[in-house]
Image 1 (cartoon, one colour):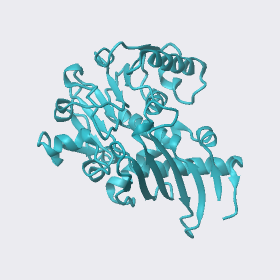
Image 2 (spheres, rainbow, N blue to C red; image 1 turned 120 degrees about the vertical axis):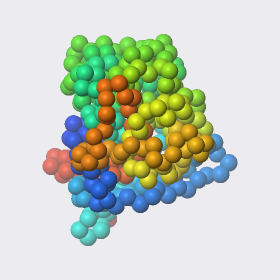
Image 3 (cartoon, helix red, strand yellow; image 1 turned 30 degrees about the vertical axis):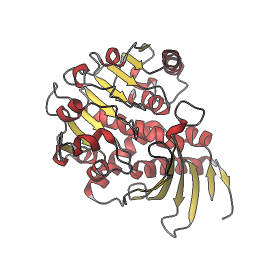
Image 4 (spheres, helix red, strand yellow; image 1 turned 60 degrees about the horizontal axis):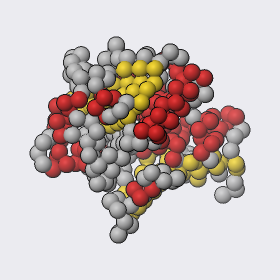
Length: 343
């Protein structure tokens, strides 16, 4: 069995290839050709919010990948040295079922989420989008800065977070990565002249932004309908079992797109950005306009006008992990990277 740690996974996974590979995999999911059982959860009582373990199995035909991802969710880690979500991915040989590889899943979870947001931007954002707002300064925000800038020629990136010093440091890191080309993906479309700056508030970051990437642990909404310009595309990946990053009006007014209707409407644990408006009748299940895979397959047109606000709300599906794991394994085998352990 091949074992790959986070450093190896980070070096092996090509972000452009991941964005491209997610498209046919999501089309397969929407067409019913991928196997995606509902995720199961083991909750630890007496801990804040949802604390415990998630199991996410999947078979993706496009990558010929049979995997299961285990994710620990510990909200108490917020702001500390350990991330809220940590993960491993176990890959099985699709021919004989033997365990083939064990991969770090923490980086994969962050970058596949950012890459799928980038795919949504490619499919739904206006072609003339030049201003990107990133809300949050954690691992998901960094993954979005690296991935989303690959699909539109942004000239300005604004960042807003809870801690001004951390936000400024994040901007400096991202700017340095763009101008030096250290991080794969940040500068390919944005270019070395892109301005990366810290906004003083979430409202300032959103003011006039063409694309908004919300990746926060917010309890109270940081994306509000009154702050969004006509034609904005919003991606929302934040999850807090005790709060929301989107207000009701944004969810209700926007054209809503998801990876999977079933996963989005019945997520485990519930994602309150959709669960609360559904429970209170602000929206119904029919409010989901389409799955991203339907846009890829051309069975749904997506955006209907340049003034429409579009929203991609991600809850994450294991198909994304299967695609990323397949790419990592192909690269590792081609380069002879990783630790082989008899199993």
